[in-house]
Length: 313
Image 1 (cartoon, rainbow, N blue to C red):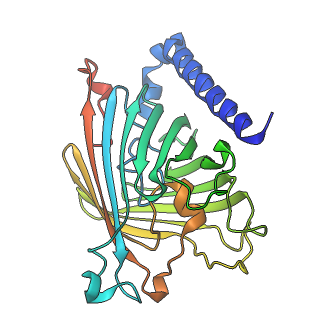
Image 2 (image 1 turned 120 degrees about the horizontal axis):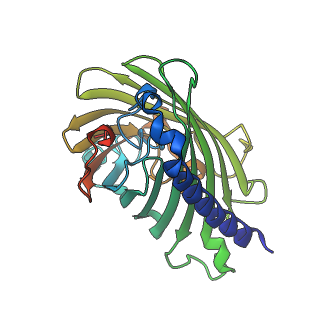
């Protein structure tokens, strides 16, 4: 069995296991009777399912559908920025539209499409551990598995010799902790698997280590940031093309059912399968760009239990 097919099967197996595990937990008599454990859990470590570029440990609540629109503009400064491009606003390097749905409070399935490479992505996000206020569980753990498909026409006749060359896979456990009502931090070890690279020295299996955080400034305003350490970790620095580690900062504004984020980052691209391995801009050389995220949450079914109402939005 070749590698791409193997990872597709593993991805589907993960989905089935996650669905069965959450169904069994929902039916557990112990989970039904132990009401104190439910209220002991710490909620809203992050206010959204995403930070700036990366995912957070948060998942959609059951039957909640999130419509997410993300936009990255061009360079603010440097050779391709300044007033000639209205500091990047004339240029759209990437645009993403996606939907995330909560099958349970701990299982989210998402689908979206990016402008860059006409990339379609499908992901499964399962929360396994949730932090508790009594200290019995000090962290949150959420597992993310994502597959991306490049749908554009090839730039060269031999670019996609096999259809599997269009596919990439992301595996990411996400660990987070809410240290106080104002401070949350997370760590994201990540494995990106791809078939097409920039050369023989650029590994197909790319390991990165991500960090993210949120500082609550007011009731509805937070500062968020994330960073992925890629180059120099599992990737040599002396490649023909210069790559940089993605860094994003932003302000997250909560407006009822909306989350609106104003962000600045050096990554041209939005989805992990693109930005982890392909960030070619530097913060110190004018490569920073403005971007925004609009997230609108919909509850598809009326929730009769007020205790399980969505606390993310």
